[in-house]
Amino acid sequence: MTVPAENLAPHGLGATQAPGGPDPDADPVVEANAMLGGGGRGLWYALHPSAWRSVLASSRYRREALTSSAMSIAAFSIGLVTGPVLARTLGPQGRGEIAAVVQPAWLLGWLLCFGLPLAAAYWLDDVPEGDLLATTASFGLAVGGVICLALWFVAPVYLAGHSAATLLWARLFLVILPLSAGVNTALEIRRRRGADLAWNVWRLGPPVGSAVGIVALALGGMLTVGSALACYFVGGLIPLVFFIRRFWHCRTYRPSLSAMRQLLPYAWRSAAQTGASSVTGRLDQVVLATVVPSAQLGLYAVAVTTASITNMLTIGLPLALFGHQRAEPQGARSAERYRRSLLTTVAVSSGVALALALLAPLLLRLAFGRSFEAAQTSLRILLPGSVAFDVLGLMTSKLSADGRVGEVTRAAFLGAALTIVGLVVVVPRFGIEGASAVTSVTFASQVAYLALRERRHGAASPRPDVALGAPPHHP
Image (cartoon, rainbow, N blue to C red; front, top):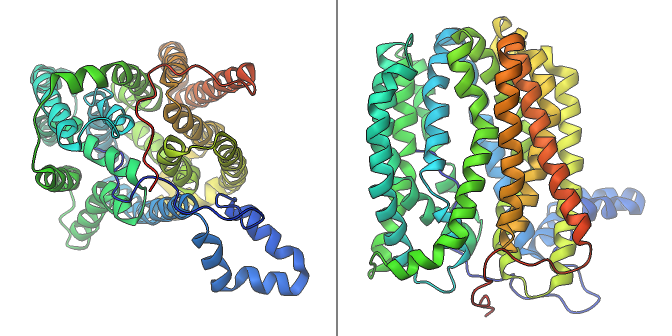
């Protein structure tokens, strides 16, 4: 059960600065460059810890964005150990077996949320948290349980040609996936209240927990396809602990038809967007599992993992942005925060992607071994899509906070349509390189569509797709 996000800090941005004081949402990169403008003294000041403490202290949004990115980098660094361990121990064949289970489980987990977690976070000021948790969890168990039961009998057909251990763990994942809606609702509500350190710890529980288990098994000489999948399974249960804690903390909770009616207009749009985005982001590996040998799928999985380095460095911005944009009473400051976040995302993601493209053969050889050096072509084709994906994440977070989930959904459907057509036409002939090209084109197309929509709106206030709800609380 793969999950997105949660929170515990209070709403709002905290105390604002007096006119003429530091900008509460100034970009840390911009401020660091300003520090360097003073020659030698500026350089000393920029490198001094007290200077950065001052920069971070002036904005809660900045702290949460940097904390989320730092935690994502830490988790990805652990993954940089786990990936080579799996690759070197199990080889391309075993790596492909794991991808055939984990990636479809991730995709299905998001689909079974039905858009309810983000809708619950959006309406948090209007509906009690206990009612939101009980309503979304009940719906997920009832509807998701039926879907997973049907997939239990489909799994042997989908995984024909894979090992018995792969089929066993795929079915075990189906047992826990109906819990995704409730668990992710708890996490998204937590993120709405603050994407702080505590939220990031719960968010990253699954990848970190599974990584620790995989490394421990490798050191003990017990790492197999089955034991690696067991680690992913146990790691996926970690956020369930957070859900139980929040459910118990609420004391009063009841499934509510009125709450469901309030959630549905936002949720169905969010669900459509999530489903379409999952198709764009994950269908490639699902399709490849049935078209190419496991060894080729293993190469593609490594290329995707390496390309995602750009996202680890920028993900803190969209993760923190939703709650702050939703709680921001000043339109001008909201627009400036988004503009600076967008510029930072483009600069960081593009720079890292260029470095990865230049160093691809060396990085793949050192990290995963010579047998994975053949993934460099796929990696280079994926990198433009990685930059577009980072930008798309920020645009999606901003539009979702503005209630404009319909526009995000239309962009996601555009990407899904291009993905499906592209995979059907390109993959049989060009294999993993074709899948890489389809992925990059679809993410870039979505960014272009949303950019054109934003340009069309211009400075005018666009009409939200759902009611804005109660105004946020500002202590």
